[in-house]
Length: 192
Image (cartoon, rainbow, N blue to C red; front, side):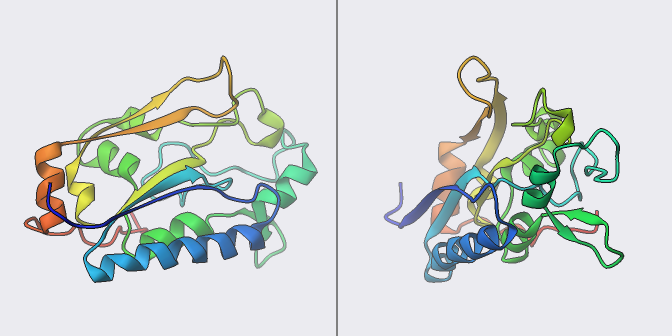
């Protein structure tokens, strides 16, 4: 492997505060900024909020649904919209993608034809909170995303309320990405 720093970050963002997750996401960006010094970036964890709906297989939660009865959870996971309705928090996903990072699950689903990469990772058995959602996510720099060959959501319901997410890389492509011998992926388009 090339002698290139790889910044690896694991996180568990605040479950109870949209503002707290925004601050934490901004701290993650400080690590991702090392990409500008030729370091690779791989990070992931429990984002405790939702992915931006672009490219997702599960529609956003309808917070006006009578099935959503956990009002405290709703306040933890939403912001007020312009018309006063509640809108799902997606700051982490939107910010990391806008900064040029890439979601390996979206890449696997849309580039590699692996739609199960977008499976929900938490929320099963909780229809009063919006049901199963993909809140556990990883992010890669625009070079190493090209080395992803699969993303697998592993059922860990025997011992956790969150499933594990395994990102599989090609060693050869990863080495090319570290040398930056392959073109970086363009920023993710949140309009698709």
